Each structure stands twice: as C-alpha cells, then as structure tokens.
Length: 468
Image: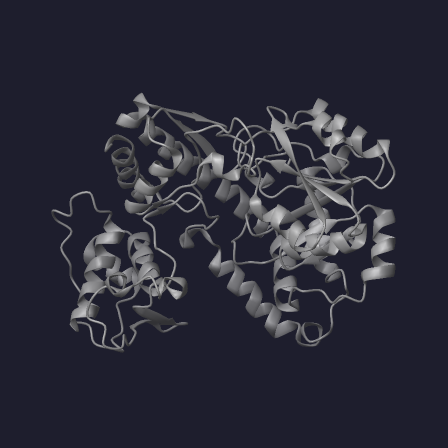
C-alpha cells in the first residue's frame, strides 16, 4: 500500500499534497506504467484522510492524464511517453493553443460540482434497470418533443415546486439550452431583434449573433431589465433571468415582472424568454414564482436545465411553449429529432418520478448552504474582512464579493490566476462600450468547493489582495 506523510505540508491542501506525491512517483518511475492504485476507500483509511481527499487527488491526476480508470476495476498509471518533468515546463507559445486548460485550486467561474455530490449509485441503478427493462423503447425513435414519460415527470415537478400549470405536450426536451435557443430563433423568426441583459451571460448574446439575428444590450438596474430602454430598443424578444440574474444576483420584484408582461402585450409578436437556470437553489425563503406562472397572454417561453441541478455534463434542458406557439412548432419544426438519447430520458424520468430528484435537490441545497456559510465565515474571519463586502448571497449558487483595493480588475485577476484561482470580475460581463462599469466586484461561484479546501483558498485570496 502506498504511504505518504502529511506532516509539514504548510498551506497546501490535503488533496493537492497527495496529488503532488502520486504525480512525482509517476514521473520518477516509482509507480510503473499499468500499476493499479489503491481503491479510494482503502487508500484514505491507510493515509488517515477522508475519501473526498483521495477522490479529488485521483480526479486531478486523471484530468491531467497521469492515470486512467476502468469501471468496476480501479485506477491505473497511464503511459507518459518519455515525460520526466511537469507538462507546464515543456509548453511554448506555439503549443499553447492545443494545450490542456489550466488546472485551478479553486474555480469560482465554472458550474462544476464536487464529484462526491452526484448521486452516482442511484443514477447507475436506474440506468441499469432501464437497460434491462426497456429494450424496445430504448431503440425506438423518440417523439420530436421528447419521451412523454419525461415530459410528464417535468410537468409534475413544475406543478409541485414552481406552481406552474403546464401540460406535458407543451414541454420540448433538448440537449442543452443552446440548442433550444436555436429552435426558438427558427420558430419566432430571424427578422426579430433579441434583447439581452447587460451585464449578462455572454454566451447568450453570442448564440443569437451566431444565428444571424439582431441583439440589443439592455441595462439592468436594481430591479432587473430597464423597461424604458427595452421599449426604446425596438426589440421583439426579451431574454431575462428574473428569479436570479447572472452575474448581479438580482431578483426581479413582482412589480417589475408585471411591467415586463405589459411590455410584451403592447405589441403583437413580442415574447419573453424566462431563463430559470438555477431556481432550485434559492437558499433563503421560498422559490420565487415564475413569470410564466402569472402570464395570462401566452407571451412567456420558460426555459430550464438539469445542468445546474444535477451536473454540467448532463446536457438535458427543456422549454415550455405557450399553446399557440406549440401548434406553430409542430407545424414547422417537428421534423427535428429529439437530441437527447432515450437512455438518459427514461433514466431521468424515473429519477424525478420516484422522488430521487427532490431528495437530491434538498440534499444539495443543504450542502450548498453549508459551503456558502463556511466560505463567507472564512472570508469574514480573514484579513479580507477589512476590505471586502459580500452581497446577493441568498438567490442562487454565487454571491458578489466587493473588494476595496487600488489594484485594477485585470491585475487582481492575474494575481489570482498566478495563485491558481480562477476568478471573473463583474466588469467582464458588460458589453463593450458600457459607461460607468463597476470595478472590484467579483461573482463567486462556490458550487465546486469542498469544506476542506476553503481555508487554503481564502488564504490564497488574501495573498492576492494584500501582496501588492
């Protein structure tokens, strides 16, 4: 059994120290190609650390290509052709374009979750049973809107947790929201102008621009999208996230919601795309009612995804079309095949119907609340407390960290990168040319953090701010 010392590791995290030890033994040849590594549980017990520590170390080694896994057998040392020193030292400007992404100690930008939080045992059980009992259905071509069982399950979930009265037929399943946006552009027409939030998630505007439609960037004030600017923009479709705006964390109040619905009904052909991307993870109070739920004019198209609630690699999203648009969709676009495999659809349907999804959401909400509280507590107990303020911490899986510093956003981001921390600034989410962009505010997405990493990460962040 491999044994490593964890004494005098300084500020290094446990998993990072273990990762370095195993990596060094692989590079030195101490661990030969094909060597089977200890199981996570036995290795953790032998070292006197948690299973998560070993799991994170193995995940890092696998991500960087030092080891590989064989299902139900374990982890093995991969052949590294002639490499006897870290990959970073061999990189050059010419090879940078094809190199692997930088690995971070903490990533406050991406939507990854800690591997230990995914319900692998339940998911694999349901998938196995689906494979055993659904031979014929798995090989049939699914309906264009998706398998009816999954649409029924989602309809029931929306009724119970979002108080939305929608029929299964109104729900269209797709492989990711990007695909669904493309369908909506074809459905509503390429002559339409789309209004997006400023600041906002850049990818949305890029998808619209990539599909050749006009885009208008509408300022977001303290209550959401500016109605006056929206009216002046001549836009036909407003893409908003009223339950939890990214990146500001704003929740659109009921008054502004009715104003938005009023804008949509004033002219024929206007619609609102309600992006409800992480509504399940409101950490204080009850979930915010949806815009679709108070819409009486069939002007709201509701979109949600399982990439936030389950994992970013589960590319299953859905949209709820108003009934008159559903008829138009069936007439013009039903020749498209559903882009999600039957295997995943039947498995997810059972996951929802049998109550596993509700249990998972409740468990993850508790987990995320704990991680958020531990991170905020660590920041407030650190020297950062003297120059930082935290806001918008209750609506979803990120909060805003305001830092009082003389450093520019660019310099602070570079210092964070050098410390192996991935940060983004609020200013990055504004479109070019926006005046009076706020500085020194950083969205902190904590979904991928573990409790044991928090003290070390906060120590690194403190060094980044005060080193100057």
